[in-house]
Amino acid sequence: MEHPILFLPLLLQKLGLPVVLSPDEAHTFLQKLLLPHVIHGWLVMGIIILLAWMVSRKLEVVPGKGQNIFEAVLTGIEDFMVGIVGEEGRFLFPLIASLGLFILCSNYLGLIPGFYAPTANLNTTLACAIIVVVFTHVLGVKYHGIKYIKHFLGPVPLLIPLIFPIEVISHLARVVSLSVRLFGNIFGEELVLAVLFFLAGVYLAPIPMLFLALFTGFIQAFIFCVLSMAYFAGAMEEAHH
Image (cartoon, rainbow, N blue to C red; front, top):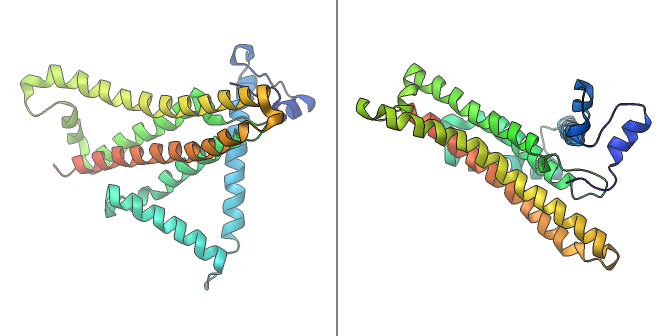
């Protein structure tokens, strides 16, 4: 789903860069790097980095009201994560927070006319899902060593030919589940909003849908993070068996 006018690609085209709006038109590596979902993905990362810099440069030993609120939110999220993955998984907070913030900002970016939600493209959500699933197995190997492979073999050697394919398929399904769920919901919101703006924008008909999209955008980022925490916790618990 693409907006009728995308400001960033249009601006880059005016600057002489080979920007194309469709993957079918991207024939060079540079054109693939300048597809709308990639451009807006970089924009989201730039916004997050800028916000982090603005917040961190004003940190004080005696925090003010703004810093207190910011610290309370981060502490609450971290404690929620620790409640799922355990105290030893506290080091996972930067990864979970980064993924959650990127997905949330990406979801909300698409609500602004002229901008595109990177998460409305399957390539973006697939990349996030692959990071989670691959890191899940990295954790399993870190905590369990080479014996982590037993997780895929089942309790009885006789059942290995049956259990191994099932386990492999289930872990591949995690990639599909994480990526397609997020992509489908955000793509659907973009499509509905575009139709409403086109058909009834002058009558403010899209306004209720915008409020709903704000809620669902947060919920989708939350679900992605909770599922990621559950996968991480499962890999770490496996190490104790």
